[in-house]
Length: 119
Image 1 (tube, rainbow, N blue to C red):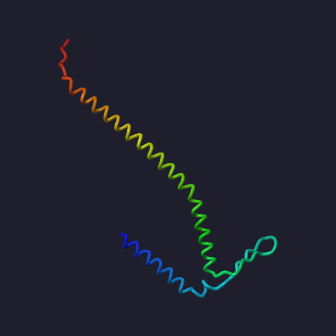
Image 2 (cartoon, one colour):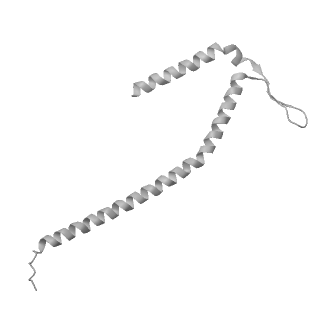
């Protein structure tokens, strides 16, 4: 399984390298971004290679997705903690009931059943 993961990542990195080298001229070309606001002058950024812009927007999207999923992960951890506590309490209750059942069985086997006299 470990070798399969290594092969998988080598293939992924190979595809990324192919995409980069086949689009090298475009990715390394410098361009400035312009944000046209409804009021005032448009905002211009410094000229950066396109790959830097792609990485900035990719990381921004990744961080947004991370923070959106953060509350869901906290809720899941809380649910798991509560379910584990409930399972533990149920296991303790099962153990107590088994002990009680064993004590009742051993108590009934100690005493021989005496036949009742007809009345």
